Length: 192
Image 1 (cartoon, helix red, strand yellow):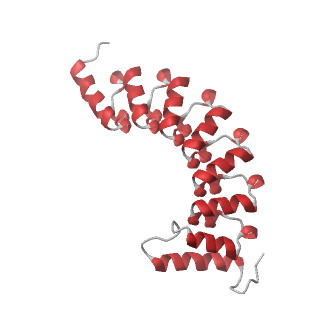
Image 2 (cartoon, rainbow, N blue to C red):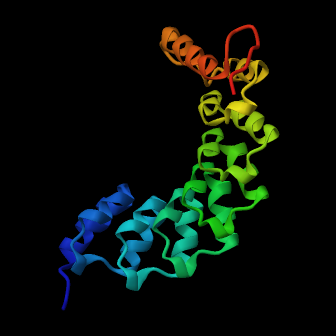
C-alpha cells in the first residue's frame, strides 16, 4: 500500500517537533525512518513504535535520550549494559530494571543521579551510606529511608539540600514532623 507523501510529511513534521506525536500517527504512516526520528527526539516514544521496527540500535537511541525508555524495551533487548546505560542517563530508570540486573553498583549509580531512586532499591542493597547518598542528592528521598537509618543528621542533610524545600515552608515543616514522628521524639528516643 502506498502512502500519501503529503500526509507522511505532515506526520514527519509533527514527530520532529515532538516524538510523542508518533502515538497519533496512523499505522500505515509509521515507517522505520519516522519511528527513528520520534525516538531520537524523545526516547519514551519507543512505546509507540511497532514491534517490527524495534532494533537493538533503536533501543540504544531511546535509552541515550531517556533512560526511562527502558520501560518500553522488549525483554530480548534488555542487557546488564543497557540497564546501566539507562540508569546513568536517568536514575529513576532503576524502577524499570529487571531484578536480575540490579547490583550494588547499579543502585549507587541510580541514587547518585536521582535520590528518589532509593524507592526502587531492593532492601538487600539499602545501607546507611546509600541512604545518605540519596538524601544528599535529593532531600525528599528521606521518605524512602528505612526507619533504622533515619537519624537527626540525615534529616539535617535533607533540610540543607534546599531541594527538600518548596514554595510552602509550612508543608516542609509538616513533612519533617511526620518523619520525626515515625522515628521517635525530638530527644533522640527512637521508636523501633
